[in-house]
Image (cartoon, rainbow, N blue to C red; front, top):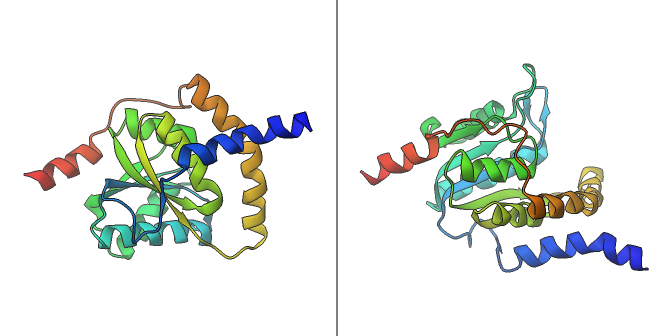
Amino acid sequence: MGLCVLALLPSAWTHAAADGRLRTTARAPDAEVAVVFGAGLLNGRPTPYLADRLDAAVELYRAGKVKVVLVTGDNGRTEYDEPNAMRTYLTRHGVPDDRVVSDYAGFDTWDSCVRAREIFGVRRAVLVSQGFHIRRAVALCQAAGVDAYGVGVQDVHDATWYYGGVREVFAAGKAALDAAFKPDPVFLGPKEEGVSRVLGALAD
């Protein structure tokens, strides 16, 4: 029983850290920046799960809740480019291309959160992901220094959804270690002005 309690402590931490910070798209706070996490590609296009995240980001943009969408995902291989696929989807659904900023080194949630803060200068954001992932995303971005709120996209409870829920139990352990020890991302790199440039232009 003690081992079970220890195993569930990281999940309890993510729930506590995200408490009061989860919203629907309609009730999301104004935050200027939405961060959309990658969720895989199918034949070069967003999977249905990723498309649902992007649809929520489109809603946030159309409602004036955010002014910039930061898409963060894996581009570790030439033939696999999540951020550009996400950008293409958003622009086809009405988000201007100059309002989309790409993070090509969001290899996991911690890396995406740290890079949002350190590379792109994001201080406050609405995060968009599935319900089973959003609490961990909020908790990690809070630990990385981003004042984060989360929109959890609801999906059909299929095999992928159940797999994601089970995976979160284990992923929460890594998340707790990341928050405690704050490792550098796989790739940090120089600061990028994409987000600040858009917001600065809108302020002029």
